[in-house]
Length: 182
Image (cartoon, rainbow, N blue to C red; front, side, top):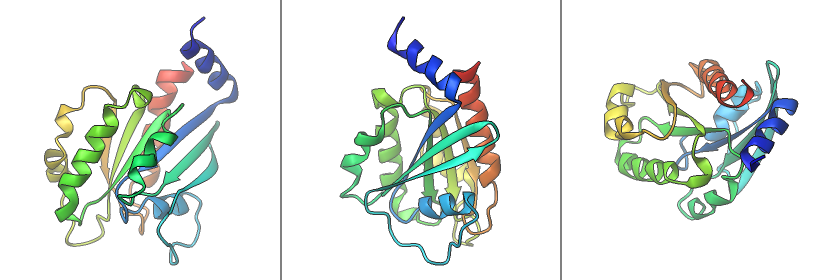
């Protein structure tokens, strides 16, 4: 019995999903996590390192790893890849000057062997701002059509209003369920 088979059997028994939340600094990762927990989002500071939160969602236990996105921390992202079932990539849709950096970091992640097969949810955050680009433009800029290694979905969202956050989480859990728990 291979290691993957053993891990799959353990996960099936526990119904546990490990979600890694990444993106450039100030994209809104921590705000999204706080919104999932219905917590106050008025006082948020940058994440230096990581936060782990556990959310009971439907019949699953979601372990959400929110990792800081500052340039100095990105080299450490690889320390969190192991056993990731779902990857949430958060983009600041209004930060047009950093889209190339965002694209580069995302495509580097998708080459990581330990993230192969992980479901990919892309939140195009801050859609409540008038300066935000629409999802169709973001999809082209990030060259998402080149992604052949992961199931993915991109959704416009707002960590402030909560727009599409639950819809995204539903898709991610369903996609992981189909791959691991069936």
